[in-house]
Length: 102
Length: 411
Image 1 (cartoon, rainbow over the protein chains, first blue to last red):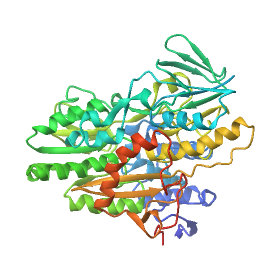
Image 2 (cartoon, chains in turn blue, green):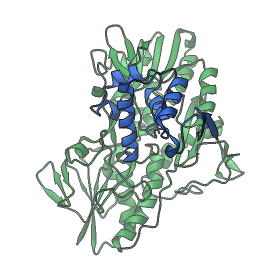
Image 3 (cartoon, rainbow over the protein chains, first blue to last red):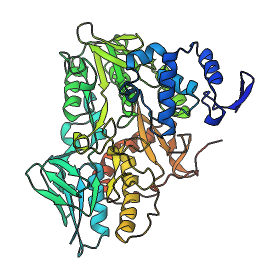
Image 4 (spheres, rainbow over the protein chains, first blue to last red):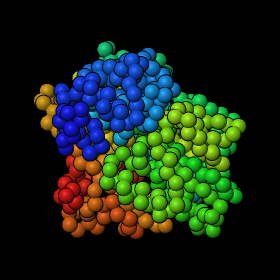
């Protein structure tokens, strides 16, 4: 389905995950974060950059993986994205819902 | 003489030994299967053991009874795989050189991954039914328990048989009702997922059942530690759930052998092509069952379907032909819901579980995603099917390796 955010049209799933990463930009990231009651700081962006890089390299993401990334530990990951952090962070990063939950 | 070596004589390894023994030309190929264990467990039975519905002897038989004549069963441990050298080093110092390696080493629980889980309360008030010993210890605890807070918990995904903890919660509800003490037991289901299951339609059906059975669900719970003193589990987000009995599914990992051999991901699961089941890195290595990282359930039904596909692919590989068979992620699981009823779900990589009829479209007799007594009998009958058909790689009538979309209501 289509969704209009900061004046741009993006395609998203019912749960709000973007389906076309080429439509994403930082402004959209900020706006999705705001919808989830998060104000993005440089520390958030370090984590989001990491998540996007892993996605581009087709590496499956999991909370465990992020905890071992060297970028952030799980505790801090939860402080940055307090509710369901992996799902929230991937949503803001504009990439599909992680398939780590089978 | 060329050699196929199978590592692990559990469900997947045994089925591959049976299939290949029938299919490959034994004049040019030998087949060996390596496992240091003596016993083969019917793992779905671990769910029933705590409630004393199955006896320990119902669910264990000797491994060697299921290895066909013509396959060499090597009953020793495995030290290391050397994939670059096409060799497997055994614990007795021997080395096996292979032309084709099939890894079927499964997954194991790793309670030590969570702080405090294997602490002073382990098998006193902290239990798991994911091992034979654990399920027996839990049975002994439940026998005389006078009630309190029962917490059923999943540490992190993926886990073997992702519906098993839900079934445990449902069966516990029944068990305490039958004992006339359901009012003395508080049941909470704690999961790292956002709902009862990973797929939307099944989640809705299962959450309805949880509610009906008065089981509280605590979702999005990422455990940080088990506190053995206060008897609580605590998550990274600051949530705390108290327990009198904690029944947890610890982190599941692939075999340590995979880590030692440098062949796994961060959980020791092996990067595997999800269609052909060939290792992504080594063309002469194939992986089956829980040992893979393919995005479907870790379950016996999956292994059964994979075994049929993998057999065809290995035969093509032997002939130097392109592997035509593609695994679709097919999984088929009975979900015990208590009170002598069960649900059935049938799904694959692309199609989530929905309502419908199985295995014959429009007829059944089994109903998908709906509780019925017939489904429960199906689940109980499955123990016989497992020992007598599945492990011997006999085809199950009407049930194909690839999922059938007919008879399913996708709207």
